[in-house]
View 1 (cartoon, rainbow, N blue to C red):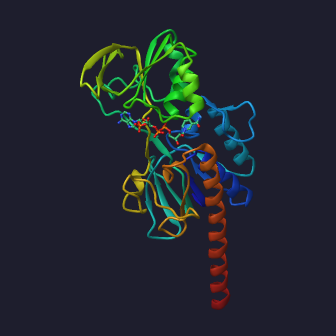
View 2 (view 1 turned 90 degrees about the vertical axis):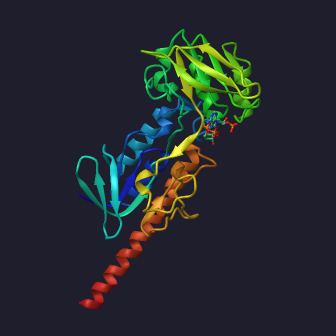
View 3 (view 1 turned 45 degrees about the vertical axis):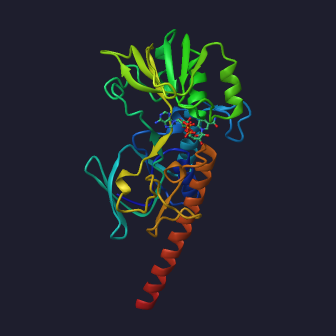
Length: 317
Ligand code: NAP
């Protein structure tokens, strides 16, 4: 199958890129990947996306943009890209189901994934008490005790969402002050279900069939204590999803794609937008803005290529 614009990833950056490319009559193909809608679709409530006075659910926001892009001709495919051959034009994208897609331009918007704690028990108890998505799994922790790790916006936002269900929420943070926005701090400090454990990290997640507790280390005193809990939600930042681009696109020392102000990567015709590039702002609205830019760049790039091709044809005729 051939497409003029392949968009890899379906968060706000990819979907907005698709919307703009579709409105330019390019019938983009969005490869939805492992997390349709991107991380925003796992976010409970989005209160700072302009235009929604009362906020909007993260899933609903992503779903709306997807439908909006579809209305103008965007196509979707649920597969994973395993490698890209950029040595030829069109580019060749290999999928995990053994298929190939050729594309004249590519917009990379593969986003970022939650960073893991990297402690014993985390992997083995994943989906058995360890979760990275409060919106998806909060309901399963009704009247239970839950731990959130981290002190940023995600930890507080998603922790506060969990308080709808849980009977006790303990937020474990490695320092004694939070990185989260003041408005979230105020809400957390005034919530009777929330307690903070400062200057501490989780050393181990305990449990056989499911989570029963965590080992908490106080970083100032070195003291290790056992804390009983049925759930652990790590919210300690993200890592960019750039594994398949290693050796193809220029990456920075943390693995984020290096793109210029116009979303251009080191390979002409490949653009990058959203959390896969941005480790500073990482907002749905900035990702959407970058997606818009990437699509406009792709449109201009294709127009330029088409012009050159028709000129060459005219000379040869
Ligand atoms: P973040 O802002 O990078 O915060 C990560 C938190 O985890 C920090 O408190 C950090 O501690 C802690 N941490 C990092 N590595 C750790 C480790 N190995 N062990 C224990 N703790 C560790 O990440 P985020 O909260 O996911 O937010 C990402 C971006 O999304 C931010 O730009 C944020 O503003 C945005 N966001 C916004 C909203 C909103 O506007 N409502 C909601 C969610 C996310 P230190 O503080 O000590 O570094």
